[in-house]
Length: 67
Image (tube, rainbow, N blue to C red; front, side, top):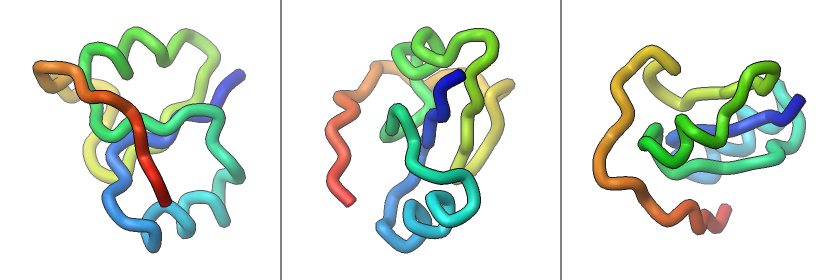
């Protein structure tokens, strides 16, 4: 099982999620097609806003994030 953080925009949001869920295995800047493909059955997705059932955004983003 991997933990994915999705859509966190500030270090404050990110750190709050880390306190609850621990360190993520993957960080996705937004819920896009690429993130949707990387979250597989058995993984856990933590969304800053929205849910997995939301339509993924197009085009996909580079997931380089620095908190």
